[in-house]
Image (cartoon, rainbow, N blue to C red; front, side, top):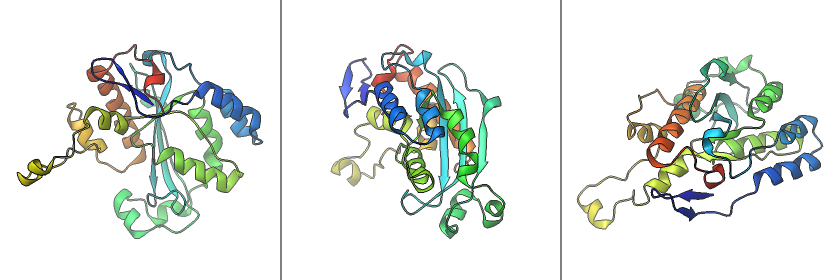
Length: 245
């Protein structure tokens, strides 16, 4: 990832993946026809202005935070571009996890045993999910959830994982607020850390409050947040290769 600073100068953060080349290689290596079709859709060149990039905002609700011991219970996605959020084409699925729900996760996202008893397994909605993601840059708020959870879920079901480029609105907020943790003097004076959680980040841009922990609502919230971040701090001409992971 290479994030421009607010003056437009690139700042190297992580080694940048050549995503078009990576997806092409994966399309040649995968044995699963669904993944092959997904990878063959490819992605835009890294120099493409973000205003020209097809995107889809994605959010998962899960039974916990560890993709190796917890599971996806709902999926929300909203196709988008920098200028438009296509709510009419939004999708939401509740899916049945392999293991019983944890009481703590029920408290957070409100999905209960009765909700998942008749829900499909992830494999039953996988075709629709991959079709919705194919050829898009996936927008998330905290890349440690959606891509790792889907990768582990597919390894368990297909014996193959999945890779795709993501644009992380939380990482953008972290970049914009590098000094969000107060120093010792600030802590002594009672200064609180600046939160880069989804709702708190949205409030800095004057975006409306949405109830959290619903996959579709959080996907929409991430889409709106990205549009605000680009408007306030970047440019429609910012190359997508400066922002994606």
